[in-house]
Amino acid sequence: MATPPAAAAPPERGLLRFGARVLVGLVAVVLLLRMFVLEPYTIPTGSMNATLLEGDAILVGKLPYVIRSPQTIPFTTISIPHFQIAGLGQLERGEVVVFDSPGTKPERYVKRCVAIAGDTVQFRDGRFFINGEELPPSPNDPLATLAVPHATARRAPVDSARVHPLFRLRQPIVLPREGDEITVDSISIAQWGGLIQSEGVSVEFRNNIPFLGGLPATRYAFRHSYFLAFGDNSGNSRDSRMFGPVRYDNLVGQAWFIYWSRDAEGEVRWGRIGNCVE
Image (cartoon, rainbow, N blue to C red; front, top):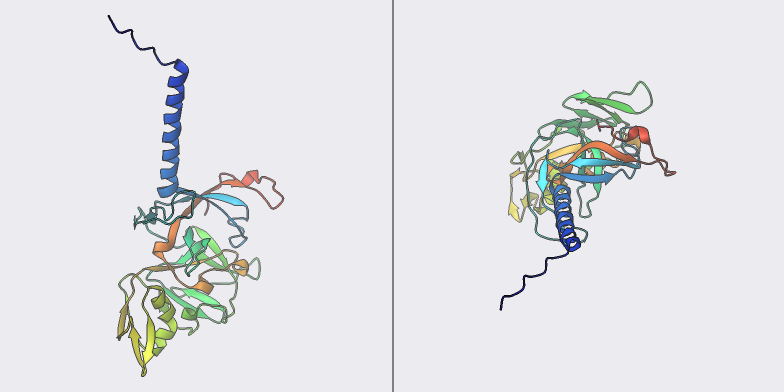
């Protein structure tokens, strides 16, 4: 006796399956974009006024600097093994970047890069000098202005007691590139000791002899490259002046454009939406 043909699935069920597959695919694409290409970030403070205002929501491009896999399972705080590779571009002075601040409890910041690895930096009389150029006073207000490519970053005089120890000796220093070496002595340790320790190397003196990583040392080769980042609104910004150089590895990406903006009262700032970050 012939077996009767199987009943065809109702059209509605086929549509539901197709819709579910499309939804799963879209979620996967969004997650991949979020992990490796773009990341949203909302400006929490006025440290970048007037370039970025508190309440601006920006898209951050992850491809230019360092491409990092997620450090946690999406939508959780569970840590997972991760990796990072070099991005498709190079960090340039004047670019507005998002990065994780140095320290045991890093915070995500958005600032303007003012110096890159290999640049000479000096702090003197409350002012910073980048490659010999002083941060000159602004003609518009008591803040100061530094001309950088494609942008203008505003600066205020800084109390020497607030600056990072690296700058307090008022001598020019060169921001390290990975592999750059320094002579190890009491003066260099006073400047660079904190940065060396941040690279996981212990620093101590025994009978006036410097020991790095438990061994006597006369030279030290840096394991990372570093940059400096300042807020445009320097009078209301915690940045590299206080916490010092930032590793390139800490870069999240480059601020690209504002996709949404609300003021403190919740009003939409339509005129800012779609503006590129410069």
